[in-house]
View 1 (cartoon, rainbow, N blue to C red):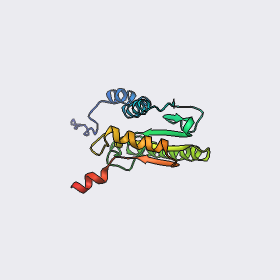
View 2: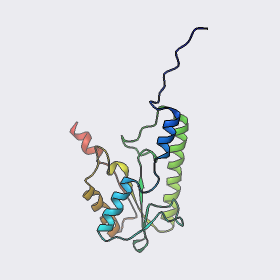
View 3: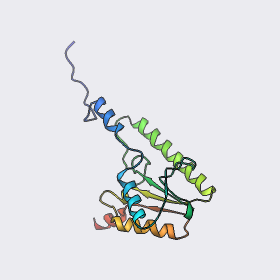
View 4: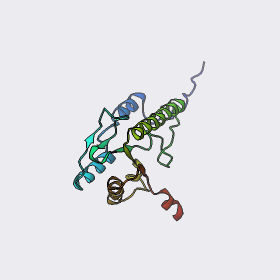
Length: 166
């Protein structure tokens, strides 16, 4: 039997290296989360972090304003923006994982709303990538939400602005 070429690898890393890389992905204290936390703290807002008593353990809880802030990564939460793309390897695994994350997000959001919490979701694309907002603009939106009365709001990247230039 002649040597057959091995099938092309779709991943540029070995399984061990990929495992190591994935183990380094953080669930808290991410760069987008730290940018929002530091900015709002500098503006005088005080908050709790990752309160386990609330559904979904929101990233930031502001009890005095009956508000929570959820800072979602576009990949892990399956955002409908160009920063989210399902990996080509192990596609079914990733599809089910992202769908489960989305379903969990919906349940947590509904439970928070039912408990009377105001909810602000800040998407990673609002803070990183080509369509990001200036940091001060993103913080302004957060501050307006916290000082206002909206029940829910999202902060997203400005993809429409980019598309209109093309």
